[in-house]
Length: 124
Image (cartoon, rainbow, N blue to C red; front, side, top):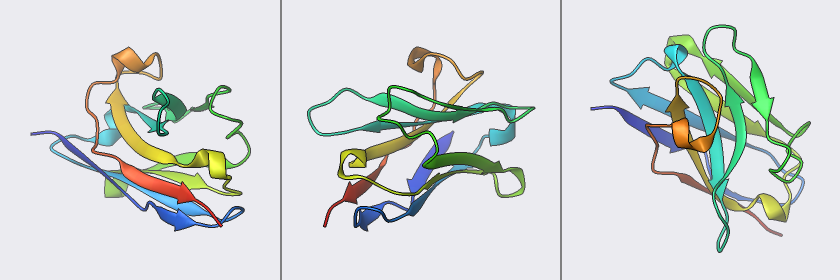
């Protein structure tokens, strides 16, 4: 059974950093595009970043409150894990963060396997 497990969330002060991990079992992540999504209280889930399979191209969503330049998605195929390095965190980054698999970095509807999420809270 495919399982994705996110970890690394927590409480951090504004300006701080966290690194989220997405580890998988029963699936080899390097063969999939992996997306990071987040959902804040009272808001719809939104895409944050995606890394493609093969060439490892990375994409960051403009709509995700300007994560470009602050967040970096990467993968370690040997560990079967994808990361989301989050720097210069802002209170508006507070959300539950999810990882998911897809054949390619595309619309949310194409992501099939999802983790249970990890809470990130940015607060002073």
